[in-house]
Each structure stands twice: as C-alpha cells, then as structure tokens.
Length: 430
Image (cartoon, rainbow, N blue to C red; front, side, top):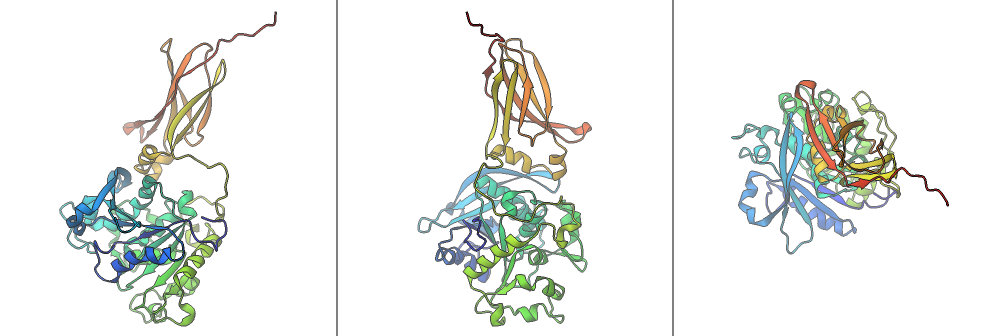
C-alpha cells in the first residue's frame, strides 16, 4: 500500500460467494462480475476470489488448477484445498476459486445449513474465511484492500484483525464490506463455530453473538473499515430501534464507517462514490489503532498503531532455505527462512498453540567423521552461530517439532548447502 492513505491501493481483492456468469442468485453475482471494470476506470488493478461450489461443476472446462494443494488447520485437523483459475480469454481479470469439496460442495443450497454427504457443509463459510489468507500466500498476492461482498465473506474481516493480527499483509490491508441484502445475515448455531474450533472469545454479545446465535454479518459490520449498503437499503431504517434486523445498537459507534452507494434510499450525505469509498477506507484504516476497545479484551498482544510499510529490507523472504557460511576455522554462521510455499503450508496447517509451542533445532553433521549433533534454536530468530572443528565438511538440517510429549511430531523444514572449514593455521612471514 502507498504510504499516503489517500493514494489508491496497489491492488484490490474482491471476495464474493457469487461471480457471474458461473453463479448468480440475484444482483450479487453481477455486481461482483462488473466491479473489476469499475475499479479499472480509476486505474486500480483487482482480482477476485470465490468458493468453488457444487453449481460450478458444470463449468469444469472453464477452470485450470494453479495450486494443487494448500493445507490449513481447521476443525482441529489438517485440511487441504486447491485453487483454480477461470480461463478468461477475452478479459484479463483474474478470478480464483478455492476448492474443498467436503466443505464447499456439500449440500444443494450453498447458503443453507445442509451438511451434505460429507457432514461438513454447515461449516462452508467458516472454512472459506479461514482458507482465504493462506490462499493469497499460495498465490503470492498481497492486496492493499479487500472488497468483501455480503455476509458469506464477513468473517474474513474478523480473522484479519484477530487470528492474522501479526500478519503484516493482513494488518496493512484496508477492508470494505458491502451489504447487498441485510435480511440475509449468515445466522449460525454456535456449535458450528465450536466444531470449527475458532476462537471462543469472539462469541460475545458485543461481538458475533446476536441473541443466542452467531451472526456473521455483524462481524463484517464491526471489523471492516468501511461498510457500504446497496440500493435497496435505507441506513436510517436499517439501524433504527424498530428495525427487524436487530442492529440498532451499532449505529452510534459505527456511523463514521457506514455509507450508502449512489442510487440507494440513504440521505445525500450518506452516499459515496466508489473511488471516494476506497479513499475513505484507506484513511480509516491508517487511523485505526490495533488496541481499540473492540479488541482490548481479546488474547492479542499489544502492538503499534498502523503505519504504512516503508521501503527497505523486508522482514522475511518468501523462500524455504537454510544456508551455512564459514566465519572462521572454528565457527559457522547459519541462516534460514521458512516462508516459502512449503513452509507456509506447514505453518498454516498448525493451530496457533502448536505454532507458538513449537520447538526448533539444527541437526548438524561432519561428513568425514560421520558425527552428528543437535543445537536447539528459536525458529523465528532465523540465524545462529555454531562451533565446529577446522578442516572439516559440514551440512545441516532445520527441524521443527510440535505437540505434546506423548504425541510429538517432527518435520524437516530445510536442508543446507555443504561447506568446508579451513585448517586452523597461522600464516607466518618468512
């Protein structure tokens, strides 16, 4: 994102349950289809991410697989999904689909609670939200703004501010949440949430609870930087105490973040054009503190208010690598990164507790003698010094272990290059 909050984002990710012509049950699919062209008029690049649903099967020839396997932790287990891309010979707009048949293609009604043959269809929108950020990493895409379309995508805004709190890409990203039909709010039974093993502290009356049920729409209203309402919505009636939608308590605290698109029945001062909405969302994002009242009681470590990223040395490189470098005859410097595709898939497949409780070690080998030894390191440190003998060849492996002592699992994350230490001789002048 540009350092000026009024500049356009480098790229916009449009996220929707529907994308015409492949699926459209009303205006949502057409709106998602035309949004990239509207953004392009303002010289803003975009791409679209949607779930691959059962109804997409008849268009199988119109998609290609771009990521065969991406793994995440969901419902307490490792789950795998693939990513497809639509073939658009007449349009350079990229449309990606997350495919996980057990979740997203279960049941005939994508908006219903039908579990389908897999018994997991009721979790489809929770799964889609959890899979979204790992999908972006797999595609190596870092949008400056998310344009979330209606309640099926609302949880993405919540996760960006909670589970992805320490992800720089998520934290620097502004979020616009567009509500097309407030009558549809994404009601879920709290048992779905617990079955998915998502964070319990979000199940509170001033967060995602509405009465005795879970309301995904409410999450989008609370956690997005800007909320836009469609042409059939009156903001005044939507948030009035007499409203059938039960959202009146939000208006006073979120009024600065609510706007209606032109053509709606909102008052003139409510209405906002697309480019102005993007500018406002970026400005609100740059002003928002990560320690606001909404998140203060959640289990998140305090951090700085948002600052746009500056040019300089990146905090990490998107590779999986382990390097050895000879410092002197008796010492090696070791450097590593595990932020490549394979490393991110492993880390994304683990729960937060497993990642934070993981143990890392360097396993070194002296080739001539065959001797092996282990050095315990801190995985996020990414560099270490190791004492060795002169005149030897060495290589190393980086391993991560996680789980309890009764069920410990170890994974090799990277293998190093081969290096030779020089003899320990002091040159003497004759």
